[in-house]
Length: 472
Image (cartoon, rainbow, N blue to C red; front, side, top):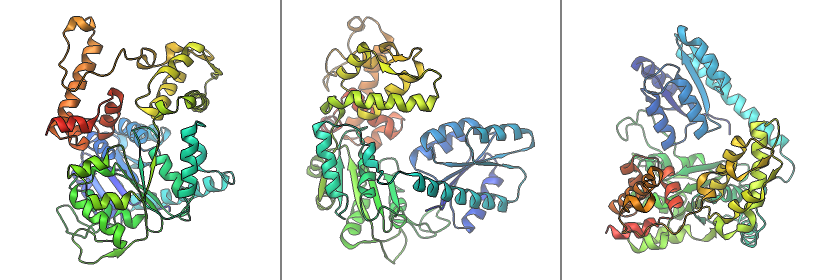
């Protein structure tokens, strides 16, 4: 697979947006155009794109900052930058920071198409080179670090389930590695050389989820200027991961059930159906049986998804793996940061802090903590002072009860940091109660990303379903 299909255009000139949208759509690309960098970043947070075509100079967020943040979100994103005569130096700087190429304004729209075709060929060659360089027998299973009893049991289950075609439901907290498990299942299956498509059901607006999954006909709704293939069609013969499947709205749940039962999809606005051969892997951190009881998730769909269930254990249940993981991450970030004096050890104090902390964000939180520590450490040994404060200073007790009010200032000695945390906790709980535990809607109320909310929920030890029940 080397085709770039979805393109996001960011430019504050309406004429540029209009022309590029028309020309690229005529060549079979799916195009979304926005007027500034901030709007482009929101789009990239909501759904993945193959290509970003961005002007260098834009209001609110310029092209260089957008490039940096976009590639942090999607490291494999192909970025083309556009520049007027006076901003050519900035365009060249963007290429130096990772953009694929730049286009000097004014340009012919066909030049963009030609550049995209070159990028597609480059991507195909890069992927083929990776495949040829990969050691024989290498697998994402090798990336599932840890030799604790629970991890050995999980790996054994993955080995048994991977080669068959059964639908799998992966459960586990945020940051445990559910997507890595899904990729491993795909790699161990006969579908390994076919597409692996990931969709975060909680990151796509409810009004667009059916179009994203199943496609739509031209004119099916406002802005549907061209027909669009859905992600299930993209995953034909391969595997699709429905991450955060609990966030699917009821209408999409009905259509998903049809895919599982009949092996066919019906694009929005179409009378025809399209046969698809796709292995479905779903993942969630929510309690699906409880959602079924509350009428928020279809029971028949739950049973269809839950043919085989794999539970990914939280890091607190595999404490024996913490230091092994930490040492692997130290080596990884030594190389990433190209340290002149690589870190060669972890001090006893730092080791004690790492092993005693509860890791509510799981492996992802541990990786982030080690990245920070390697970046900030001034010695060849990772010291406790370079670890995040929350890791070193363990919580003195459990999070306040669901109904607890904000404590008086004297109870936390007028610490603004502590007061801010308490206030954030109250607002998150209030939003979850208001939305009956719906994380997507709660994130919208809080004006933060869905992923950020999930991380905070785990960081604070909040039970979203319990909070949602209090709001009923």
